[in-house]
Length: 113
Length: 112
Image (tube, rainbow over all chains, first blue to last red; front, top):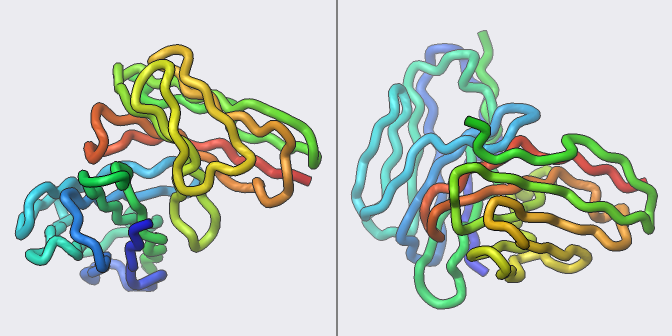
């Protein structure tokens, strides 16, 4: 199946710093989604991207659908303690038998006071 | 305003026992999914359903069975639990494939 390479695996940052994480693949995706998972809870959708080159913001979060359609980026500006959690990218290919979301392995974010 | 509800939230089983995990959604979504989440491996699709009465295999279906008798419910069964099935199980639903999936809060399952 399709593979999504998400990096970094973990990040330790100071409160107030900006954060960047990304997902890459050898396959072309039609949709990119970014989720956040808090401890003990299920993933919650942050941003959805549907067009190559699309840049979408949600408060301090900004995500981009790569021009090649093989990657996506998530940036968090001015991090705060509640940003702690695991961030997942997910991609969707609409053709063939791969009509399922493929998830990256996640980026564990720790924000230090 | 429940969204996706999973029961139970926690369960401990002995090897060889069976159990059923229940997922219920109140958003009238056609598609429902069962994932397992293991450390460092993200979410892996076990089975999914494209509508009432239909099911299909995902990436890691072995050892699991599912049923979708009602549109709002999706059941995941373990017929003979094995320690390798210790994991956190998430149910999700969506209107269409490729649309954002809405997740439940998970069931933490330990097999001894």
